[in-house]
Amino acid sequence: MASETRFTLNGQPVATDLRPDTTVLDFLRTHHRMTGTKEGCAEGDCGACTVLFRPAGRHGPLRAANSCIMTLAQVDGGEMATVEGVGRAHALSVLQEEMAKNGSSQCGFCTPGIVMALTGLLSVNPAPADADIHDALAGNLCRCTGYRPIVEAAAAAARRLAEVSAPMPVPVPASEASPATTAGG
Image (cartoon, rainbow, N blue to C red; front, side):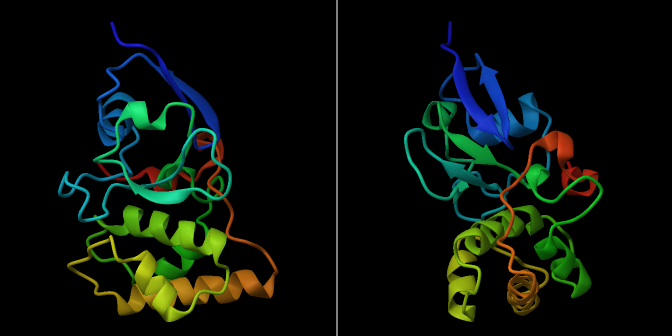
């Protein structure tokens, strides 16, 4: 019998008695029906599975992590955010709006991971240089769009947030998240 794993997911407490060696990606997609987080390589190389995570007992921002190589044992007591937690009810985040506006996504498979990596960046660095944006995207592969429009969207989102003196919002509970962020399978 597996011991219970508890953590916070998109602002909501979660408890599961799945095996502690279950990957976070498998938990999210198969057992929790959160299909925005994608499986690409299953080796931590492509970034399609990116979530934001803060381990138990740590302070500071949530950081980008590959859910395909993280286990439930590693997230016990921690806090995690997925693409389903980005934005507000029936509204995209500023970053998602900018990505949609400038065509930063074509097939869309990599988009959730890129959104999470850049959300993590903008939450800790509200005025990133292009090099910072490229560094944040280093673990995310996109084979359709190329990175120029993605970098431009991140810079535009940072400018918009600066105009209103607002930080990039931390992902919200799934009950308040936009249905548009949960599409995919």
